[in-house]
Length: 58
Image: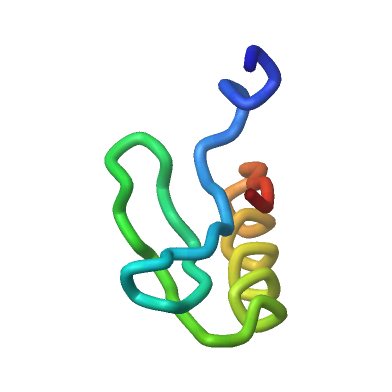
């Protein structure tokens, strides 16, 4: 999908860890995890706002 190429970060569920995670797409680096999607999304929003980046929720 062309529009997803514009994003450098995502919030996704990691089944093997059984938690939500904020991930850098380029190298699949896990930057933050929590059982709460709201906490991960809040972290991602603050992080991406500070860096002037975008993220999506998978």
